Image (cartoon, rainbow, N blue to C red; front, top):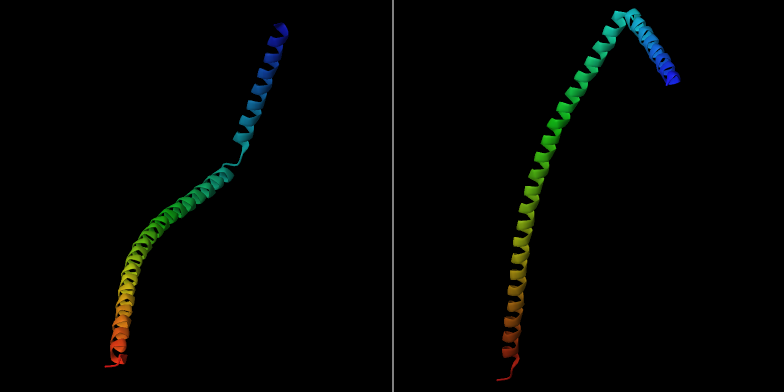
Length: 112
């Protein structure tokens, strides 16, 4: 126990000594330099906040553009389906016309 107490006292004194040295070092630091660093950090922070706001705005724009493109794509798909249905009807109409034409030709070619 005595060794532990001595060891803890030594660590405590060393820690206090380090704190005193740190306090003296901070006190001796040029305040102008500290203020310049703080100012630079604030400017960087403001720049980052501005960039963040721009990116959020751009994200909203892109989301709106994607939604609009999706809506247009759906409209185009619907229109394509309509055109395919019209093509199918035209093919059926043409096929029916060919049958009629073949029937008429066969009637005209029969001997009377």
